[in-house]
Length: 366
Image (cartoon, rainbow, N blue to C red; front, side, top):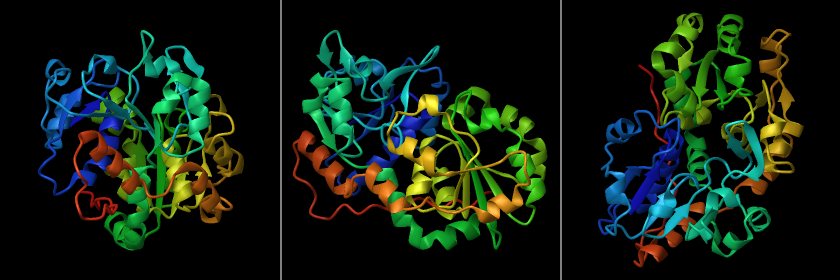
């Protein structure tokens, strides 16, 4: 099997799928970088750091593989000679497709621009996280609709499986203090772009809390560690926890007592888990109308940056009826759905053991 990555976010998504193949030595997975993203710098190095077996694109597009997974419809997927499954890039399909000049009136991941090349539908399977996206796909790219399969969200399943150990995750990150997680997507309307001073203010106004900052991998790729730590210098001296770029945000989210965020996927994960939530900023222009993310934007409390932060953080609450939002966003039984699909396309019988979601890896900062 081939894992296709264009960005760190894509790698993060694929690493939630691999546990479905645990203990099965019939299946070997290798990874390849699909060129074309401005956020692909050092991506091959990051793959090697995870211990992945990496092949070049010329090898990837040959006939050495049986099936391919890509958490994006972008890139030269049409060059692959094997069937490919596209996965949702984040928590469902809630964003409009980004362009060089802004956003298009197309649902990212479901648009004809991404799924069709020279009149041919590229993915053999278009993975959806919820049945409601079937109508979206039929509207955006009707010729791809027959290839859709609802697979749920393995990342959300793993987050839910981790909740019973929440106190252990929090103790590792914050000791006996309450943990405030600040999370930013990328782009000019993101929390980090609009409210870059917020981590410094939180560490100053709430010194008895631990503040953790989760930045979208694209922010890391664009600015790198030295620049980010320079910008965050005072906050870091005040004990800000800057969460590493890959595979650590999940533990921070499970541990969080309060989440302050924007219109990124982490907002939906936090809301669906029932975390007390505040929106520091929210870009309606990037969000698909009438989507679960749009509903979150309508319901979540806003952080007033002109007012003291402590009373707002202490009054933060989960979204009303957050279980309903979760039901609108994520189909149940994602591990069963996705493993069955993988083995069907690999033309192998499924292993006899059930596919349980594994808790996310704990994170103890240095």
